[in-house]
Length: 256
Image 1 (cartoon, helix red, strand yellow):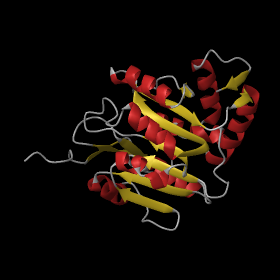
Image 2: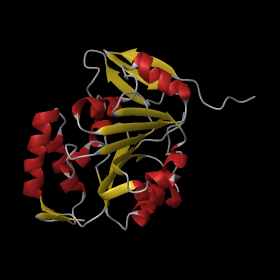
Image 3: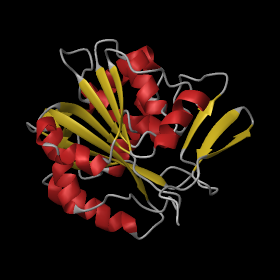
């Protein structure tokens, strides 16, 4: 009988522990001397919603679809003391690995890790309009494209978001899945999508927006980036620079 999930495996190189699903493809990483930091550049970019939303507001809720090495879940739980953080992961071995190999804490009043299919989570009507930030990173052992990538899925993702709300998603640029995913995300989010340039390992992060129109000057975003970088250590100034360069139709203001 074919196993339901690929094996969860690990490697270490130059002080970094990597998560794999039985192949050479990296599914997550943690620097052993900085276990609470976000090691991979694309994962850092998935936090770019911080340029648009404040996690200090009441009842702020961050949801991660696909736990990976738990870097984003750990970071949000540790960094944002008022936020509730939920991670949704189908493979129980990934959850075990997160806690035994990558320093993910046990659930508490603000942290919930659910063994559940991401499709079931976003299709559950009780989650409609309940999520401020949805971080989507859904890959299998081949790591060549998201395992959930239909327009129906992306529309369901949008339904979970509050207004305002932001979805960040990890896509693989060097693969034929990329154009269709961008097209479907744009369809689901009425073309309110920003895209980062591809990082060196092929990942492309997209941000999709729900709620009122955003009309903000790049100077204001740069000022916000200063605050984010100073308080979290994330390279937010670089985010603004790359978003502006990659979305060239914008001029002095970002309107989306």
